[in-house]
Image (cartoon, rainbow, N blue to C red):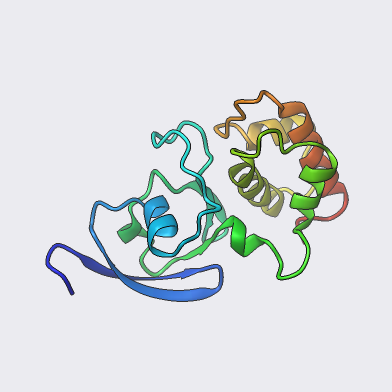
Length: 160
């Protein structure tokens, strides 16, 4: 182990990784720079936008708010891990069909937070969808289509 590093073991997208990391490395940096999971976007780097949202033990978290060392022993799912080997996840299909993609920068975070929401509440109302996505910003102001996409995915059983 190199001086000034800690070794962590995390399961990311169903694959276990053991790597030395600097104690101050953010989880989003570990995912992108060490594991090459570039679907997780870095938006604001200040926890305001949610572009870096991943599932941490099944719950949506902003990976720019967590140190990689805090993920030691935990399971992370990124947008790459949510996507099946063939085709798209129902949320991805719904975002596409409902034009919830806009420029696409916020989309991975929106989809990951939506997956977390639907896991907790498989049939949310529009108000609950908006509350569930609070903290994930779309700079294209396309929230109506995003809400429609989550509602459509819920109606089609995306939480299963």
